[in-house]
Image (tube, rainbow, N blue to C red; front, side):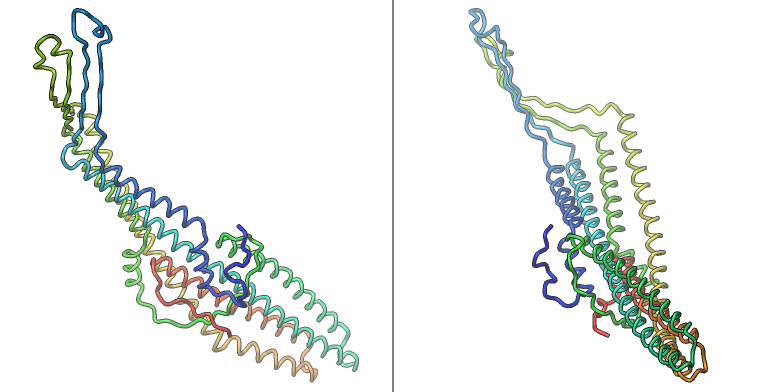
Length: 411
C-alpha cells in the first residue's frame, strides 16, 4: 500500500474532483463489487447450458472365458432434454441476477463519490477553521499590544492584559484541537483512496459556492426513481423471481432423456438382432405437493421483493425531499452571511477597537466583539461545507448529479 510518488505529488492544492477520481480508481470496494458482477455474468452460460451426456458401461465378469455363453457387456450414451422454456427461464433468472449485481456495483460507486465529497469538505472545514484561528490570534495579539500601551500610559488596569492572555491561550488550545481534527480528516481521505493513513496531502482548494436553479422536488424525485441503481437492482431481483416462478410452473411438465445402447446381454447367442437399442426416459412429475409448494414459494418471494421495492421507493422520495430542503436552506444561510452577518461582525470589531482606544468601552467589549466575529466566521465556513455536503447528498439521493461539479477556486 505504498504511495511513493503518489497522484498528488507536486500539487499545491487538492480539489474535490481529484479526490473523487482517485477514490474511484483505488478503493478496493469497487474491485470487490466488480468481481461479484463478473462472477454473476459467468453464471448465465452455466444456467442456459444443457446437461452433459451420460455414458454408462457394464459387463458380466463371469461371461468372459465361459465355454457356454459369449462375453456379455453393455454400453449406453444418453442425453437429457429439458421441457421447452426451462433453460431459457434459467438463463433469464441468472441474467436478472447479473443485472442486479451490476446495479449494486453502480450503487457502491455513487456511495463512494458521496463519501469522497463529504471527506473532502471535512478536510476543507478543518483547514478553514485553522485559518480563522490564525486570524483570531492575530487580532488578539493586536488587542494585547493596544492594551499594553494603554496600561503603560495608566489608562487601563492590568486586568486587560490578563484577559488578553487568557483569550490567546484559548485560541492556542483550539488550534491543538483543530490540528488533531485535520489529521483525522487527512486519514479519512487517504483511507478512501486505499493509501496509508499518514500519507501527506496537499491543502484543500477553496470552495466558492455558486447558486443554481434547482428543478422542483417532484422532478428530482421522478429522476431518482428512474436513476437510482439500488432501485434498479431491486427491480432486477423482482424479474429474477418472476422468471424463477415461471420455471417452477414448468416443473409440472416432464423432461426427456434419449439414449442409445449396444447390449450383448439381450442378444447373447447366435442371433444378435437385439444388441443395438434406442431408449427414451421420461420424468414422471407425480410429486405434486412439492411442485405446488415451489410455485407458492416463488409467488411469496415476488410479493416480498415488490414490497421491498415499494418501500425503498418511498425512502428514496423522502431522501430527495430532505436533501432538497437542506440544500435550499444552505443557500439562504450563506446568502445571509455574505450580505449582512459577516460584514456587520467585521464592522463591529473595527468600531469596538476605535471605542476601546478612546476609552468608551471596556476591554471585555472588544474581546466579545472578537469572539463573535470568530464564531460567525467559523459558522460561515461550516455553512459553506454544509452547502457542498448537502449537494453531494442530493446527488446521491437522485442517483445523478443535479448540477455540475462544485467550482474549486481560490477566494
